[in-house]
Image (cartoon, rainbow, N blue to C red; front, side):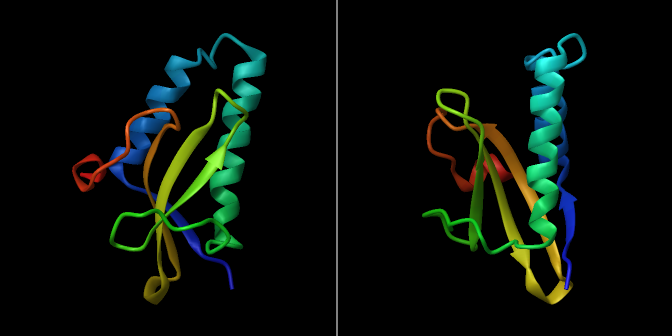
Length: 104
């Protein structure tokens, strides 16, 4: 059964900011990469448990996308009772470790 992938407001802002940061509106390569990230996130609808859990509480998992040094980390949780994947945050993988405050 497929899960519904939903972005929190925070994740939507992160995704929009990323579009601007990589200048996807003016670069075919950046736009291709950006669309690939979106496909990777949406693919969680079929196999949401394929990515490892983080060390944080609340059953948060993370999807890594890209190649070093440009790896992005998509933080999400699976809400089994709703058959939903909730995308919480999208960030560059080299940033400091995230905290619960980062998800708000």
